[in-house]
Each structure stands twice: as C-alpha cells, then as structure tokens.
Length: 125
Image 1 (cartoon, one colour):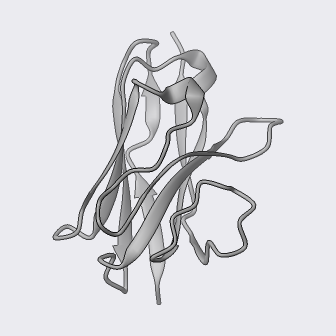
Image 2 (tube, rainbow, N blue to C red):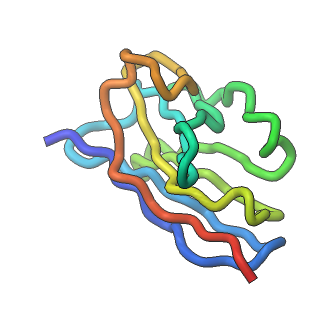
C-alpha cells in the first residue's frame, strides 16, 4: 500500500527549530513531486512549498520565506521541511502530499493523489 508518513513534529519554543520528514512507504519517491501543507485550528489548509522530482523547490508561502526550507533525499525516500525561527503562528498540523511529476502547493488541488496523516507542530513558551 502506498503511503506518505510524516514525522518530526512536537512542541518547541518560539525561535526554535524542527525538521519534519515525509517518508514514502510502499513506493519510490523518485518521480513524485511533494508539497508541504499546514492547517491551523479554525483555518483553511494552506500550502507551504513544493519540491519537484528533480529537487527544485517551488515558491514558499510568504510568511515562511527565509525560515523554512524544503529538500529531498531520494536515496532515503524522504522529503524534509526544515523549520527555523519558529513563531507561535506556525502552530498547525503539517501534512505532505504528492503526485507523480506534478508539483502543487494548492491544498485544494485534486491532482494531489497521496496525503499523509499529518504531524502536530506547536510553538509555545
């Protein structure tokens, strides 16, 4: 069964860092583009960034530019989201989602065929 599995979330103080992982289970990630998304309580899910199968990242959400970095390691079958200088407003459930050769950071995009279950990130002192 093909799955995306997120991990790495947790509680962190403002200004801290976390690295989220999105692991592909049951298939190879090589030809998949993967996006990171988040959903805060009471808000719509929003796209953060997407990374193509070639490793090229797409534009970042304005509010995370310069703080978050998306990357991938195809040998590890994993996509990462490095999050630095975290703020309380970054608190959300973080999801990864993807499709073959199709990079999208639109959370409503019907072509995103695989979604992970999400990992909670809480930024609080």
